[in-house]
Every structure is written in structure tokens, then in C-alpha cells.
Amino acid sequence: MNPSFETLGLTPELLATVTDLGYIAPTPIQSAAIPHLLEGRDVIGQAQTGTGKTAAFSLPILHHLDLHGLQALILTPTRELAIQTAEAIHRYGSRLGVRVLPIYGGQPYERQVRRLEKGVQVVVGTPGRTLDLIRQGALDLSGVRFVVLDEADEMLKMGFIEDVETILSETDAQTRQTTLFSATLPEAIRRLAGNYMHNPLVVAVAPETVTVENVTQRFYMVRESEKIAALSRLLEVEDLKNTLIFARTKAGAGELAETLIARGYPAEAIHGDLPQAERERILARFRHGQLTILVATDVVARGVDIPDVSHVINFDIPQLSIEYVHRIGRTARAGQSGEAITIITPAQRHALRRIEEYIHKPIVRGELPSRDAVLARRHAQFLSMLLDQANAGEFDQEGALLEELNEMGYSPDLIAAAAIRLLRAHEAQRPLEDINLIKEFKEPSQRRDERRFDRRDERGGDRRSDRGSDRRPDRRESANGDQPRPRSSKRDRLGHEAGMVSLCMNLGHTSGIRPGDVVYTIASAANIPGKSIGAIDIRQSETYLDVPEAHADAVLHAMKDGKIRGQVLKLVRAERRSK
Image (cartoon, rainbow, N blue to C red; front, side, top):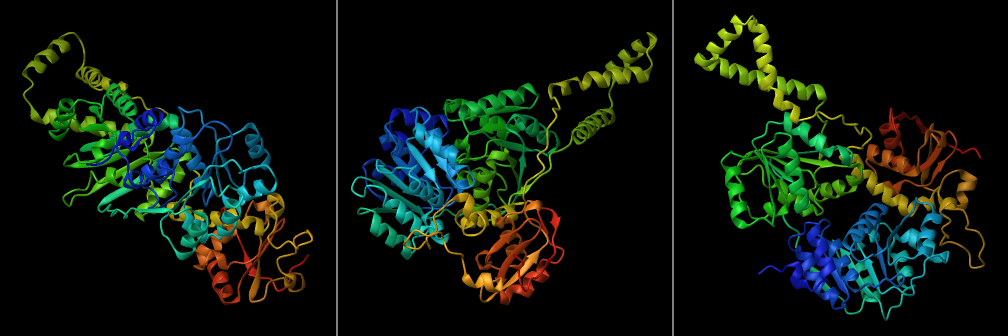
């Protein structure tokens, strides 16, 4: 028998919250980890991203948390994940009054320090910024009872492990409960666990097979207030057969179905609170074509057989990547093809990226139908219906009425126009609201690559040109407290590091470029590892960078007619840098 959240032993407040969030049953990693974490055990969880591990470590922390001071620290490899995790914990703790603070590079120190001074119970941070605030005396971890290392293998890849160990040494090893989550467990991670965890229990969840064959996947990005308008346009122009629209909560499913019905769409909602007989009645209507739109929560994605679904529409993006797979798996069955559409807001771009990483496939951005396209579709549909009726013949009663109107002095053209207006009056139920299109958005492959290099910036920006702004102490400081020495004494004499070639591009600070832009553009264009690119020196109107001598020609060739942030760049060898 599969466990439920009720059997895990969580507080009533947390149970009410997970119910409100639309959670039906614990995921495998949640079922495996939560009971042991509630008992106070140190746990190593081996699970993929998108399997529910944030709830797996957050719910036990919130279960034991009180509101007296900072008690929990979660370390994540990227600022993006820090923000996402903090938002999730805030949602889970909404009934408890828990204050959560994400801390990461790129945000002013003063803002984070003020929040810490006001008091928080949970900090979610990247290792670099967390260590900065500890060294400044702004972050005191002496009272922390819970530490979580999330995506530990990613922190290892990014060179954060030394920082993580320093941070752990600031906590009380005797009283803290330490949880580590990682997709893989290389030797360095096992060694870290052996040094800083107390007899940890390893819970591993085998990755589920991800299958999304024969499903065309796309997304549309709009503001939250315009999601209904965007959905309405899609419903007007898509060639729909049976359509499943997923909402996150039971209340949301009901409200969305009511909105669609008010707009003239044949829709009903189905969710776990409906009596079984009512659910079966709705599903029967859907299967028999009496109902073409079913608004559902994730209960339908698990175990309910609905044939011939042409479209799955995620009105609310799923919180777990595996739920996305379950949802879109309702279409493209028995060798057929299907469409999967996801509507997101700008704030949900991160969640979309994680789904792409989980399914190992980009989700392309679609262009919403214009107002003219919707009107043209309505016109074509009405014309088709009218011609079908005209070709059917048999207008005895209508003919008599037409003769009566003619005798009253109305022309056939005027009568036809009036009849058409009456027949199309129902279209007023479906308003065509304006939608402010969001144009700036990177394509999926670019977003994934840039995310990878943004991670480098998180740890490496203060090793390049951001050191002064981050004020992070350099590990290479001399014992007497002198200022950090330059990266290489050879650079001052020769202009570049040994084994490297110095290149110069015609864009600098005035062009708005950053080290991450340079790394991403060159590494992806020349197909070289981003970490192989050396020092980057961004000046007012030019930028110097070091690349390995073996890659120099390939970089110059690849960057011919290249662009950064839409600006054409020229890249040449720079034998010696001017001061």
C-alpha cells in the first residue's frame, strides 16, 4: 500500500498546506526520506532533480521548527535554485509564520543584512555569498539545528566543496542534523558525508524512465493576469479533439472550468474531492465526446485511462518534473501523435528549465495567435458550418419565414446579414482581450548553457572582474593580512598567462557585457569548455580575454561575425595589453 502524507506523521498545519497545494501522495524520495528526517537521522538522498526532494527535506525541518532565531540553513549551487527553494519553503510554511531568506551573489549585501537583522528562521543560500556574510559577521550559524546540502554533486563540480566545509565548521557538529541530496555520489561527496554527517542513512530512488515520444511540446509565456486570455486564444485556433487542461489545485481547477464555461467552452472540472460517481459521470461524457475539455488536477495523470487525447495543456506548470511527464503522457497513445502546451509566467522560467533538463529535450516557445488570427478562425468555422447547412437543403419552414420577411420589404441580403449576426451572437461570450507580448527570452539551448555559465559566475565572478564589488576575501591572502596578490605576476609583464593567448574584442562596459556573456558566447560558438577560458578584463570599450593557445585559431574562426547581446563583435589577437 502506498503511503499518504497523513501516515508520514507531519503536523496538521503542514498536512493542510500540502493538500491546498494539490499534493496527492508522497513521491518515492519523500516517502523514503521524510520519516527518517522526522526522527532526527542524518540522511543522504540520491534522487534526480524534479522528484520532490525540496519537499522531502523542507517538510521535516518545518515540522520541528520554532520561531526563535535562525535554525535552518540550506545550501544550493546556484542563485536560481536558492530562490526557487526559498519560495517553496515559504509556501510550505505559510500556516506557520516562518520567515525565509534567500541569499546569493548579484543582490546588494545591505538588503540581505537588513533581513538577517530583522530575524529569519531559514536561510537558503549559495556557498559564496553565505561565506561572505559569515566572514562579515552578518550571519551567525551557532544556533542552526538543520543543514541541507542540495545538489551536492553540482556544488562539487563548481568547486564549492571547500566553501561548504568552511560553512559546516561554523555550525555545531554535535547538535545539527545534516541532510545531503545528490543525483550522484562520487567519492568526494562520500568523503564529505563521512567527515560531517553522523552515521547517515542512504536512501536512493531509481530514476524513472522518461518517455515523451510523439509529443510536440511548446510553451507560451505571458503575465499571470493574461493566462486566461492566452488559453482562450489557443482553444480558439488549435485543432482540438479531447483536451486535458491541468491546474495545480482543486480550487483552481474548479474556477478555471467555470471561467471556460462562461466563455462558451464545453468544460468540466475533475479532482480528488469529487464523489466517485460524479467523476465517472464526467469521464464518461469526456470519452463519448459530449465534453471536449476536461480541467483536472494531477489525480487524472495517475491511473485514469482516457483515450484519444489530442492536447494536454498545463495551465499551471507542475511543481515536479516527473508530474510533467505524467501529464503529457496522457496524449500520443497507441502510436498517435499529440500536443503538449505549457503556459508560464516570466517568474516560472526556472521551473521550465528544470523540466527541460529532466526530459533531456528542449521545449520550444510558441507564438500566441494574434487577434486577427482568432477572428479569421472564427470566420472560417462559421463559414464552414453555414455551407454545411446550405448544402443540406430542406428549408420549408425557413422558406416560409423568408417569404414573409420579403413581403414586409426586407431584402434577402439584409435578412441574411441579420441572421448571421444572431447566429454569431454567442461569440460575445468569448472576449478577445489584449495581451502584452513578452519578447525577450532566450531559446532553450541557450538558456541551459547560460545557466551553466551563470553557475561559474556565482563562484567565479569574484575571481575575474567582480572581486571588488563582492568584497569576498581571497583564499590567496598572505598570512599577514596583506591585500590579495594579483592572479598572476606574469600577467603584468607579458599581458597574458603562460600557455594562453590574449585576445581583444571591441565591446566593453559601454556595451553592457559581463564575464558570463563572454564565456557563454565563446564556449558555445567554438565548442570549447567554458572553464578553459582564462582571465577576462572588461574595460570601457574593449575586453581582453585569455584562451588556451591550442584553441585560439578555433575561437577566432568561430567568432567571425559573432554577436554578444545582439551587438556585432570583432575579435583579434592582442600581443600586448595597454594599461
